[in-house]
Image 1 (cartoon, protein in one colour):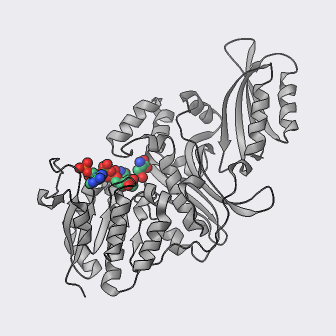
Image 2: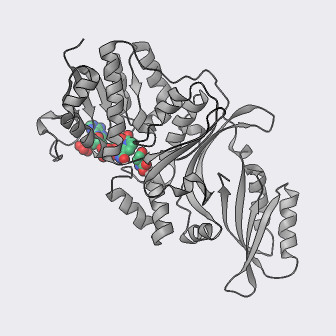
Image 3: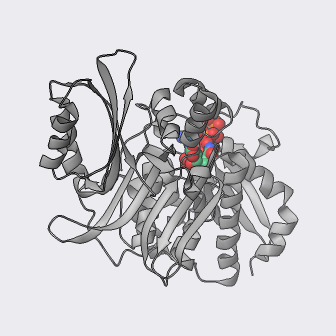
Length: 431
Ligand code: NDP
Ligand code: HSE
């Protein structure tokens, strides 16, 4: 048994500071859980002059390469693609086990890292990369390994959930709410990754890969962020018994030609107010899974922030450290199923389409005719007056329709003379 394990920490920002704190404050308990002490031997940063609360400045270094070369376990919480990718590969080459929270890197180039870890016989763990503190990677990879997952529906970005919640409950505008989320440490360094859905898309790719035993990269994920949503959309959602959530969706599906495959997408969606995901407030995350034998499962908790994310990182550190003490490595992700990722246009959902139309006879019939021509079935229509007496507002809810059919329908409706504006088109999920 090694008399201690050397831990190298890459990054000392929102997450890294908390990882360093927990490694220090809980050193005795961690040693007991692992079976040998964990020694934090160094922390790689860019700027040595920055003061970091509770962190011994003597541990800081700008020489990340040298740090990883001498470690047993490397914890990467720097973020970004490079240098983390090169540093993780270097760590693996030197025989170190790796823990990372870096979903962007895993979603872009995970297979290269998994292959390197396999070849070296070391662990590469990444619980914190999806939904922060929530144990979700391990349950999907291990606890559900005997089941067949049909669908994963997740609120996996704390920043956007916080923003949408603040817009809904306090009428904040998008920019104000994003600034608050940044101040609270939820947002990525560049919040574009959050509000444009890149962060959620990376997590969707990781979850889909694990759930469907198939390699899914961020390029396979259809993505739409929340920047086009208005306070009016949020208010309308409430008026129709829904809340708007940015959802990451991964599901088994059948393509137009009968091919069995999967679809992975991230977009804002209307969620019925009585669905469990509708009650996920603030920066909380939740992942709702439908599996054949298990039925419906929901995992809920803090998806962002320094301490919650550090909790997941430390859980991984204990696991990989135990494996080093006891020998062997933990379960790895598999990609044996190799299911095709189906084109986005074949995805089928219900939609709510809001229109402003001329308030005159025959208008509803014209709009309904366009829907019928495209094979889109209407579930409900609600008409309300607009401030201009010659204009009416229409809210059309459809039955499940393909994205292709819906896109064609909306284009044709927008071209009708009697239609003043297509105000919004939102998918309805979880109904
Ligand atoms: P921060 O930007 O707060 O911290 C990044 C740290 O890495 C900083 O200490 C920075 O050094 C250091 N760093 C960055 N680039 C380099 C480099 N080239 N060389 C040396 N050091 C470098 O990021 P977070 O802590 O928020 O996030 C870290 C990772 O965790 C990311 O992958 C993120 O996606 C992930 N994550 C974050 C969550 C969160 O809530 N914040 C939640 C879940 C995952 P310096 O301080 O000197 O600038
Ligand atoms: N920016 C991310 C979020 C951090 O808001 O959820 C967690 O990955």
